[in-house]
Image (cartoon, rainbow, N blue to C red):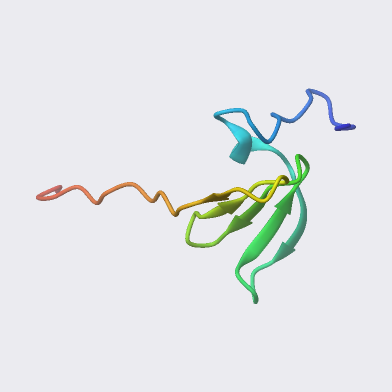
Length: 65
């Protein structure tokens, strides 16, 4: 259970990446969030149940000033 106030989003919530970081290992390229999600620097995710979420970086704007 999340001890934060307000409570962090659950691992199955659409905004799961908004949970607070519990452990950060930038040298290895990952962080553990309060909801049990492992967030990778390429924006991929590993959910607590073992489901992998592919990286989902936004596409760069073409011709942006």
